Length: 148
Image (cartoon, rainbow, N blue to C red):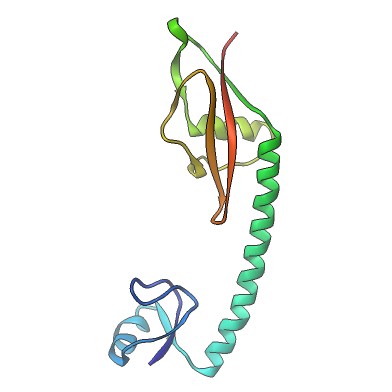
């Protein structure tokens, strides 16, 4: 039986693919669960139309992510923190602090998309990755400076 997957199914295929599955698996599991529809000529045409719309949407999202990446890299991120003896920070710089910094500069960044190994606890420049799109990750430098 040929089916069109509505969502990704492990060991079967990705969403939007036309795959061949056992009749019972398709009829008793995939179709009732809403994970697939039978691959009739009508459904295949609908899938092709849907793919074009999705690809256009993905292209627009990628273009917007490129613009955000350019804006992020044009703004130098400097965060001031109180410093104790031997240049140790009181507290740390987190993904939320970086997101708040960019929000103040007019660029919306979701803190959950900021990839850090952990909070920044030292002065200096630190490399941080921001996942803007599945195919685009912006690399920024965050400078932690002593508060004056």
